[in-house]
Image (cartoon, rainbow, N blue to C red; front, side, top):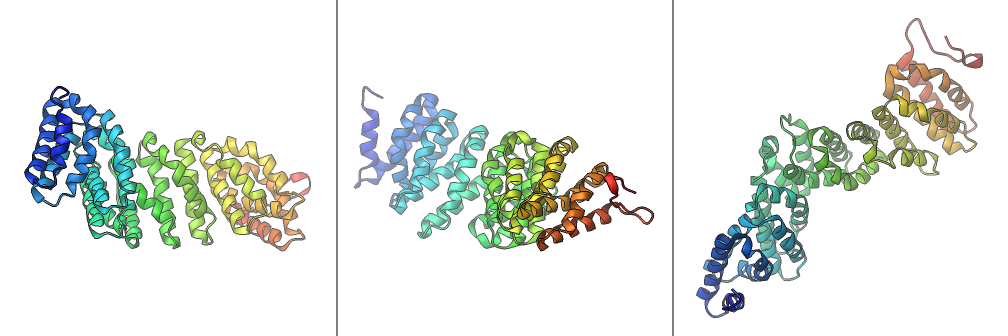
Length: 409
């Protein structure tokens, strides 16, 4: 290769504007070198990448077809190190202003479906969101190429249940209006197999779009699916997505629609229960901070409901450790803090059920104090808490009431 300056001579042939047979011959040579040299050809991949991208947009069909054949072989034989080398260049090509260069990058990314399953699974979480981003490109051929590449990725999904949903999922990626339809399809599916790394990469962009949806229905469905994924996927694949999903779930937690807040709260509880608090180090402290802030009552209501579900997921020990602080804050000098923590006492009994019964005497006093509070919104929160206790723990023969010294009957 060095002695005869093969690389440079092939470059000259591939860039010959007058003779398409030379350009086509260069593509044939790249394909043959890749299939015969194997790993020895890896150092040349970054050199030929710009040449391949140009050939993808060649004016002669035979050259384009030869470039696609070469790309299939090169991608199929490419080791992990080679994928790491070329992926940044291909992804940066999606930001090119020249539509032909962008189209070439998209088509070459689509050829990554010929990589080994391991290399493909590592690349999908990076590639699919970027391809989704160019689906709305102003140039028609760029959009067509992006659609085609996404379909290629959809064909290699290994999870049978996700595979059956690929047409629906791809339509949602192309058309945001169909996001809710795709989320509904995911919720209705009974999964018999774990959602693998590749399938997860296809699903996550749709979930993220659902969480950003203006309508409460899309947010509810997306938040519910996030909770379900904690048990449907291997945590090592799912945890990396938490950094992007969790802030969106938090936004739904303070949604004006109560049903959306309730769904987001249950999702947070499910996540910590199944994945452990180690992955959410600031979740409980953050919700406690929201309960103490001078923010809107909707934010405090969402934080209270979310914290009750999170503590339920973490167990009684975690609740018992926080309960003294909760009771103290329910009687804080600041009215907004009182309202926030009395609201928490609305949700804790309902969330914990019979497990919370031993702690009822401790919360009766702050609830009664709240009923006589000078601020109407604190009184309303206390009334809701009292009703919740009666609804969950009262029977025909026994009603919980407060007495002197905390005694109760």
